[in-house]
Length: 485
Ligand SMILES: *[C@@H]1O[C@H](CO)[C@@H](O)[C@H](O)[C@H]1NC(C)=O
Ligand SMILES: *[C@@H]1O[C@H](CO)[C@@H](O)[C@H](O)[C@H]1NC(C)=O
Ligand SMILES: *[C@@H]1O[C@H](CO)[C@@H](O)[C@H](O)[C@H]1NC(C)=O
Ligand SMILES: *[C@@H]1O[C@H](CO)[C@@H](O)[C@H](O)[C@H]1NC(C)=O
Ligand SMILES: *[C@@H]1O[C@H](CO)[C@@H](O)[C@H](O)[C@H]1NC(C)=O
Ligand SMILES: *[C@@H]1O[C@H](CO)[C@@H](O)[C@H](O)[C@H]1NC(C)=O
Ligand SMILES: *[C@@H]1O[C@H](CO)[C@@H](O)[C@H](O)[C@H]1NC(C)=O
Image (cartoon, rainbow, N blue to C red; front, side):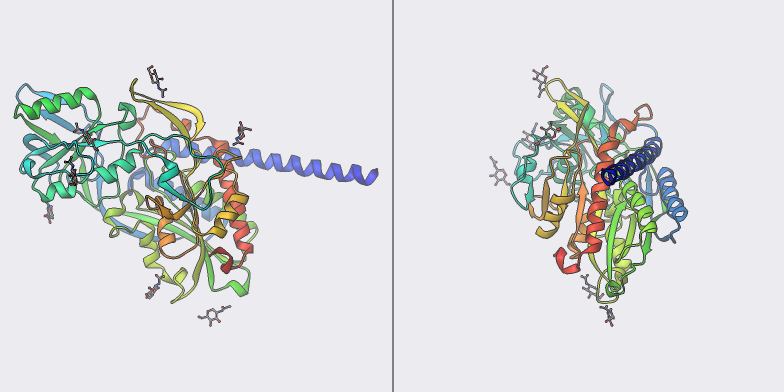
């Protein structure tokens, strides 16, 4: 009886301590979210991005780590403080724009020309730009609803199918815009008339961000009024002027940070694990992955890993087109600079990796007939990838994420689109990986100063995802390299 009583007491004490730690963790997670919400957009190389990098660096140093960094240099587009303008001459009207293509208009940010309608009704045909040579093209773009159940490859039948999804603007813009082809055809600027999307969702989307420096300006319109005005103006042979009042600043620097945490097991001294994220972004979701890495850093300091573990905070994701040739991404800059830490032929071999992106995002609902896009209490379903069937099993067993009882593990080697995000360079480098890159339609929206971005993140869901990653990372550190393949 006494033994039982003591045992129970010990268990109770342990649970209480655990709750205390969980509360402290939640408060810390919230403080990191608060910082991101305060900084808002952190475009690559921008002052707010630099603040976050300095915060991550000082946090790692405070934990007791030696922080290394690599510097990139590029020409930076300071986004316009006044809105881009599209004016139709004749009966002078200003057309309401939804946004502009990042870094577009690199050669000439103000262009004037005849407005020429090149919209196509044939969804499988490429746009014929020729009629708009020397002019401003009015092209069209459709935000097409996605079916995640067929879009992604899976390792086995999903425990519960993905719910119906709307179009993800980042996906439609990558497939549906082509400023390089338009410039090659001598077009001076492009206005994309966007359908299948609510005005609110289309507003201030920073897409497609993967391009290098499109020579000509590209903008989006998403209201039916603006679309009607443009079609009518083109039909009547009107001329227009498109202005992107942004400032180009050469030789801007940004830093990738990394920490090498030495492993304790001599038999694993030729191996590494790479845990990564990126630091630039446009809102409190894109990107908040540093929260998971900083949280784990504290644990790694207290309990060093068996296998040398690299914590990698990459810069340049939001503008990787200028940094690497397609289909590489920002992480490739670091991989190319440090073969000794992963490649195997000239040093250590990375046997496991994880890229953490977009934690705890809430779900919005769109109603196209009402033209609304509104926040809900629900959470956005996860895009969680595992590169091998053994890692898929491990993930299925240890993950408890936004929907604690539903874990959908995706197979990045199959499926209709390549793995999104900065986990893909690990996959392509042959590093077995488990990566999260949930991508709600609002992922790349830049929110205004009056919007409280804390609303975008569910802290408890974020915490579950961070702790799920930590269970996987701890388990992987106890496993042999051959078990990940
Ligand atoms: C715009 O393009 C889509 C294909 O993406 C097509 O289905 C639609 O009919 C086009 N709209 C117009 C107005 O041409
Ligand atoms: C649509 O475009 C595709 C590709 O160019 C072409 O093969 C097809 O014939 C076109 N369909 C129509 C109805 O014009
Ligand atoms: C833009 O400028 C670059 C560099 O001067 C040049 O190589 C390129 O041809 C220009 N592109 C267009 C479409 O004018
Ligand atoms: C580590 O690599 C070195 C150099 O390639 C090799 O000599 C050594 O045997 C390796 N150690 C282990 C434990 O595999
Ligand atoms: C590793 O580096 C060597 C030498 O640069 C190169 O030949 C090899 O392809 C690299 N391996 C991988 C997996 O990238
Ligand atoms: C969208 O709004 C319309 C009009 O209020 C309504 O009839 C319809 O059910 C709504 N659709 C969805 C998916 O909620
Ligand atoms: C998951 O748990 C929630 C809350 O307990 C419950 O409402 C939901 O039905 C469960 N879903 C599945 C698929 O078990």
